[in-house]
Image (cartoon, rainbow, N blue to C red; front, side, top):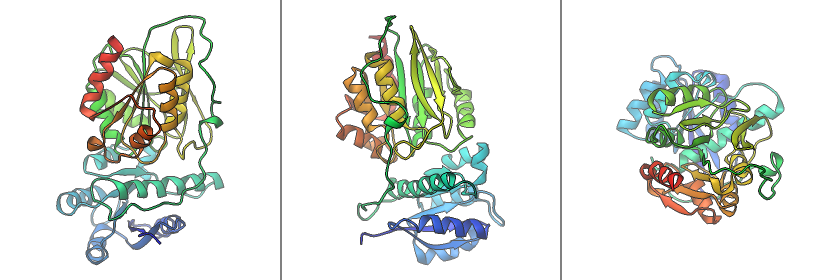
Length: 358
């Protein structure tokens, strides 16, 4: 058997520690090697256990999670997945967790419907796998990973040719997909865009209710307007729409007007929102008027959709390996043959602007 991902759980709730342990150890490629009630207790145990990944709560006694995270990343970096109830409300402290070096942020598992618990298991285990493959700490070997069956974009939008167009337009739209490492990547991309840039639709894998705070934060530092998307929002020049956490977002067109549809549905490519769903809708309703950008992230969400955009005449860009936290999503898109240009993160905004002005 291939080497398992060794995980250490830090949370002051015994029930949460038990639940996380059960969820993680339901996967054959993950092993929980220890747990602790707070960072001080954890520090003693981890000296001997040497975990590959840590799951970390934020609110804890004796030392809060953010303080510990900052100390850990400056002294002995280990990939960290923040697992906090604060993520439900998109609390500002969770953004600081990204700044201090967290690879992923997920919401704590809680009792609920069978569907909710199953989706929580998928998200938590995928977050740990993404952290294990991040560049913070090299993994000794590539581990084959057993994954749950995946649905594709067919469940949200059947694959078909371009939609009939009765009103021609040359207006460009930009569709962007990202996951692990995407919060910082999107900040760099969006802050580099000018006020007159084309309308942008973004899918970032992120917990429910977290995207509104993320969009608000980006809006405060970008020249363009950034907001969480609502159903039927128009894609406007100088504005980026962020798909709400746990809702799919599709591009639609009415005459010369591009707008988004925000709707519920099953996980697609193990995610909701799914990049594949957004990209497929872009292939159908925008075609050669679209730019597709796939950024850092684990897995293959977006690879099929970007190929469909490419085949429909869209201009497609993938972030290069050197600038990705995890090269999974761009790499899979490149393998699928859907990428026209591979480039560093810092060059993508200028390339998008250049193409849209031609």
